[in-house]
Amino acid sequence: MAIDAPRSRAPYASDPRKSRGRVRPEREDPNRNVFRRDCDRVIHATAFRRLKQKTQVFVAHEGDHFRTRLTHTLEVTQMARSLSRALGLDEDLAEALALAHDLGHPPFGHAGETALDECLKGVGGFDHNVQTLRVVTALERRYPDYDGLNLTWETIEGLIKHNGPLTDRDRQPMARYRARGIAEPLRRLAEVRGINLALQGSAEAQAAAISDDIAYNAHDIDDGLRADLFAVDDLRAIPLLAEILDEIDGQYPDLDPARRGYELVRRLIARFIADVTRESARRAAQTELRSPEDVRRLPQSLVAFSAEVADAEKAIKAFLFPRMYRHPHVLRVTGEAKDVVRDLFQHFVAHPETMPEGWREGPLADDSALRARRAGDFIAGMTDGFALTEHARFFDTTPELR
Image (cartoon, rainbow, N blue to C red):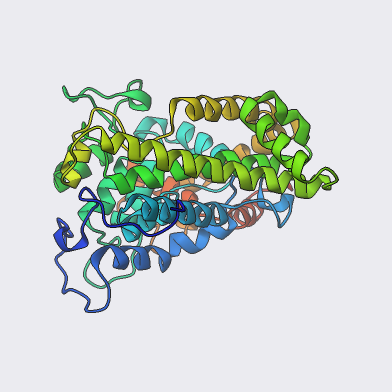
């Protein structure tokens, strides 16, 4: 059976008919289940539209062919649906999580996030995962009865656990949260929604998360090749990629460099998806899983790479870090982007009246923490282009970021 062929529904797949619901109860839609409605709400959100002009790794001015947050999100969504179909999971829930997972990213990619985190250090810092939750629970203001998107419990849980469990069974922060603790907005949201931070996410949440990893690795290779930060044959340093290149060269000995790179990326994605499908099915066969709750109680992820491919994925990340993310040109541009974010933050904190209506209301003059957070939220929602336009409005010199 092909890995993307429809299969019977797994007993541990999330069921929209058994959703734990929304904070604000709503009348059911006769034509769409609750997870499908979550997908549609994300697609129609203002924050989703802004992703088309937010940087992935390169700033938007580098060229029209490099990936943005929107193209990355669409690629993650396609992979998440493919995995969910192969594993018999709920495709709509996986899609909703993939569509929403990057809504909290600020302009200028990780450079913007680092700068905002520094600026907001005194009021809890900035984390794009936490900001995504703020977007879908409060900052989107489209509906007459509530702020946010009023998403289902399962979608909120999946966004909270995009990187897996946040605490151990003793409620002590783990992994990335060990050093700084769990952000108060995230902890509060989990308490309100009754989400156990020590448990795994749903299988659909895991499918969306690993699809994010696959997309990052494969498509950063594609963008790095396009930008001439490294050559195709440099990738032979990674055994899995050398194996794929040998296959391509044997089948197409005279393939031009551009198509050779595209074929490498295409086959790498297929390898990743096939491996995750096999490994996840193997793990599922080792234990009796009768419900989504059984997946949450597992000691490790259900949807995962095999050990061999996990090592290859780490090797790809290790290759990309110095050659792409730390490339001198990329570092220069991201350094300038950080300066733009810092300048804007300092300006809006000092002059909140220059923010648009809806952002300058409230006791900003008497509450420095609120003023800082409001400025951070406003900047986080900006596209790259709008951030540069705003910077040029208040400062004499604005970098071109190219």
